[in-house]
Length: 85
Image 1 (tube, rainbow, N blue to C red):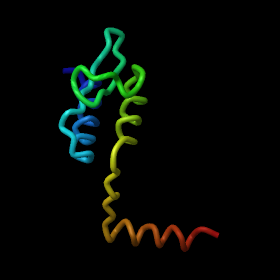
Image 2: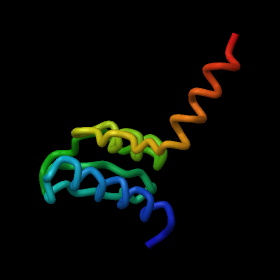
Image 3: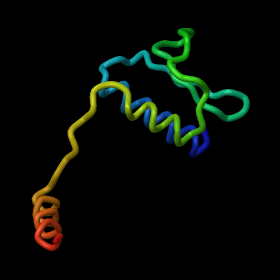
Image 4: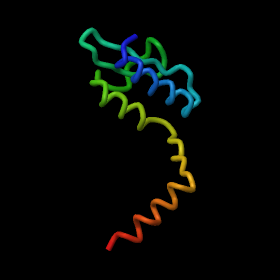
């Protein structure tokens, strides 16, 4: 598996966990484009996309996980807010 398909497959695995649907399936065309379907053999949910567009599409699907914020992130954002005129 190439680094390209690994990145796309990782995005699909994250979607499966977020959406609690283990049936999502990724396919790769002969020209190296990716598309997603809800289950193997089902119609695609998107047109064949380039890697970056595919990963962005998959990341936008399903419920989103809240961003983890550390105490240091909060302190840094406060410092940035103070310096902004």
